[in-house]
Length: 458
Ligand SMILES: *[C@@H]1O[C@H](CO)[C@@H](O)[C@H](O)[C@H]1NC(C)=O
Ligand SMILES: *[C@@H]1O[C@H](CO)[C@@H](O)[C@H](O)[C@H]1NC(C)=O
Ligand SMILES: *[C@@H]1O[C@H](CO)[C@@H](O)[C@H](O)[C@H]1NC(C)=O
Image (tube, rainbow, N blue to C red; front, side, top):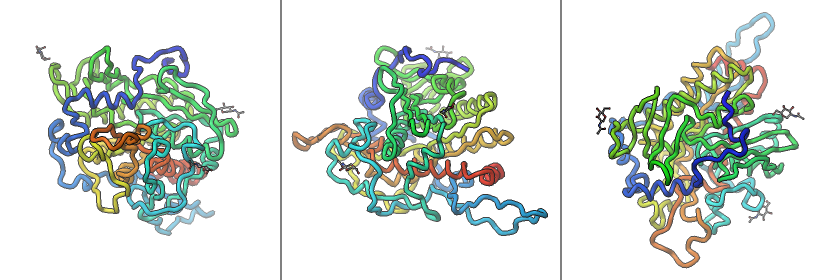
């Protein structure tokens, strides 16, 4: 396996030196139309990816039989009784975490900016003076089951001696930092490695449990060259080559959480089989516009295939999660005062999952289902979609907005101010993602019976 992992080669410098956040914003600046933020997503989609939009995209969502199932309600298949009596009792209806509502919850977060030292500046909303704090007091209530509060000790116990990796873009990092902060409430992580440049690759150790958590910067999962000030102002993606900066380490990883999406919206040229396949938003270049949906699909497929193949070859057991697309909540210009002004979640049914959010999620879920089918005969890999798109869509109140910077209105309210309506405040709604992650891990580690039911359910 490739040796190009940054963790193996600590002197390696990475071509891009900007942080994710500045990359995000320079993207917007660089696109004079700031299409990403100004136009409603539906328009964006129609203009740059003119495929027919189904009347009701949710009608076409894949059935939820692949979705995380609550352990309490999807009891493992009962052991056969001696004598081989068949179990006749009908299984209880499956319960998934994807549909539900946000309900008020007084208990509040497990951490704050004082107790957790790993919150990225731009997401440290309370420390930056965000005045309303109601967004911290909600709990996700799935329609048919109960999502327990995150149990840090349980997580540490279940992943004792394991190496966990979050791989992807800044949303992967956002989720990782949420997890680290929640775990910090019972055990302090020790930073054991950081990329010299911009923290794109970091590793922590929880010595009490000999658990390691790493984050790998890989916004396309496949090999890519990010646009830069010195090079082309578009990304290059090589859709048939997995990014070795993370995949090269698969031989030592026990659990991998993949999380990508937003970087696929950027201008890019795509390569496959050694030649250019097309591009997305590349006026002036002699390439065919092909949008980014199929590109995301191919990138995921390449990555999941590599995961399966390398896990097979290594003889290890690897658990793989794909976090689905995280919706942003811009209302109008991204640099306008009040770009994501809501201070409460949407009610159930108030905000349909549609357009680009629905399409990105669907592609990710479908690729996980396809990968499961691919690995059907192989028990060394477990795959699941961490389907957080809908519950996140319902949290327009959870973003830093102007509080990506400290005290943005110290000199009075300004008309123009940068807003982050993409990432999530820490603490915040993203903590729920890890609550669901833990439930899935609990189910997988529920013993042989659970394993059996999972295998049968494939
Ligand atoms: C953070 O949490 C700790 C422990 O729960 C608490 O003592 C402290 O007052 C909190 N700090 C802030 C700024 O809320
Ligand atoms: C710590 O975990 C690693 C695997 O991640 C394992 O190889 C090692 O033996 C563990 N150490 C102890 C002391 O259990
Ligand atoms: C654009 O690409 C086409 C097909 O690859 C080629 O025939 C044509 O010469 C190219 N045009 C320019 C200006 O490069």
